[in-house]
Length: 87
Image 1: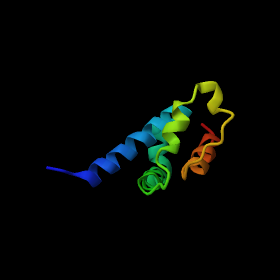
Image 2: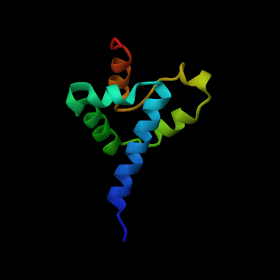
Image 3: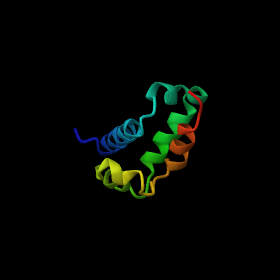
């Protein structure tokens, strides 16, 4: 049985989780933020992203280059603001 939309959503969620790991964010803390609303918003941003390969290209850069490159993603503001939250 073909499930293209389900596969699409699952693929985008895996990219988001990889991105979260790449930034070193605590996934459990992110999923608890605002009772899950922050993570749900981030997943929705990924599902409807108009440039889904930008994060893959950014993630494939060597680690030293990524820090100097702009992060072009609908979740970039969310990720960067979450990085500034106290632990």
